[in-house]
Amino acid sequence: MLRLAGVAKSFAPGARLLDAVDLEVAGGEWVAIVGESGSGKSTLLNVVAGLDRPDAGDVLLDGRALDYGDDDALSLWRRREVGFVFQAFHLLPYLSVAENVALPLALLGVARAERQERASQALEPVGLAGFGDRRPSTLSGGEMQRAAIARALIHRPRLVLADEPTGNLDAANAGGVLDCLAAAVRHAGAAALMVTHSPVAAARADRVLRLADGKLSA
Image 1: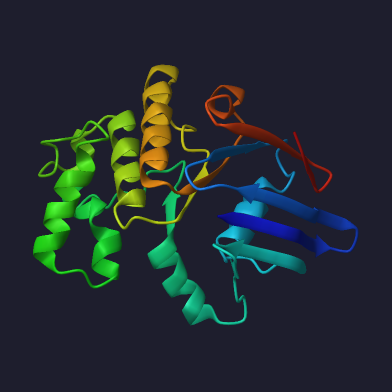
Image 2: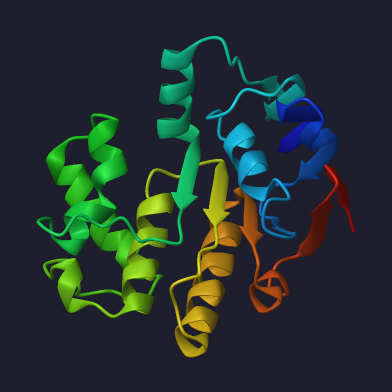
């Protein structure tokens, strides 16, 4: 489903963070990428998301290459096809949990009644049924991250990108969030790519790859 073919990226002469990277991620598969700070993990995620343009190579989803020259098309593609899970939860404090979860649908112009129904449905599999009317400030860290996972998947994306999704959580909450993320990705049949420093988090993925000196290796 997701394929990187010869992707390269440099930010200065002699500072190549990505060096002809090849990668394939199947639908329903969760791949973790680990590496030292500054190894290029976040750069790789940004290239896959269409936020950074590669110097060479292609990123393809379902066989179609991203067009990095059309910012409007990339923005629409991200709204429709990509779900993001960040280390920071990025829940808006003045919205309810359900309203936060439904935000991707609002950006796509989905009617309010359908947004409400789908948000309620999305909260059930992440263990937050009945939490829709609450404010984010009333949730624990683990609950906020599970709400963020529901938000990332509510629009049924083909690609899920996670950047240190358990970085702000203790071990007990992290395990539950990772289980939730794995189940949600597999249920949706999405291709999932996670970058992390945590070997514990990485071990929950289907595959673990290491990024070093611009290269991916098993």
